Amino acid sequence: MSIEFALASLLLIALPGPDQALIMRNALVGGRTAGMRTMLGGAGGLSLHAAAAALGVSALLATSATAYSAHKVVGIGYLLYLGVRMLLSAQRPADHDQPAPSGRAFAQGFVSNALNPKVALFFLTFVPQFLPEHGPTLPTALMLSATFAAIYLAWFSGLLSLVELIGNALRRPRVQAWTERVTGGALLAFGLRLAAAGKP
Image (tube, rainbow, N blue to C red; front, side, top):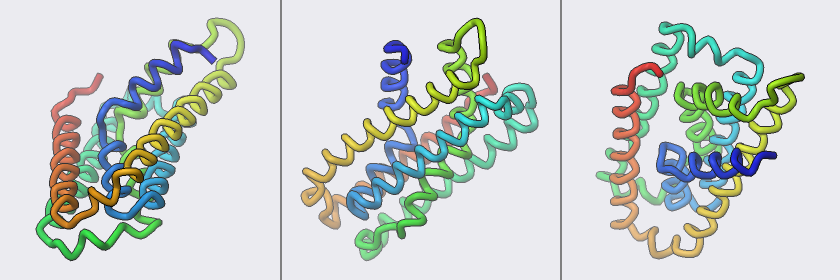
């Protein structure tokens, strides 16, 4: 495994994005288990894109304006939906003590990544830089994608451990209301930024 690939992957994963917002929010509202399930869902979404890129399926997004636009619109709609839902939840204090069911937490992580065309294009443009120039590339592409997923899980597991240490102080109703507002606002911002971004 290339150390350059590992370091670049860690940097990309650590940058604030929808994954971080959803995982941290669900961990604060529903506890470590909800955060872990959101994280596993996110890793599943990443793995879907990684496999599609390795098999050449994601190239359709890079070459078809229609496919890319359709994927982008659905992804934006989902982020905006989650953002608005959390902002509304912040106005209903009773909802703060109701964590997302396990299936919903997993689905939020999975769908937010699976519907993000930027994730697909990332694997199409980033991973090939580390593929061998000669010989079969599929095994290496799959290994690099698995490495990326492992780094993703390790990073967010660390963050979840940190949240667990200070979680009780952050689970007071007023703090949870602000958590919902900040997370909802962040998801809206991510959705709008994706909407404003042109096709690479």
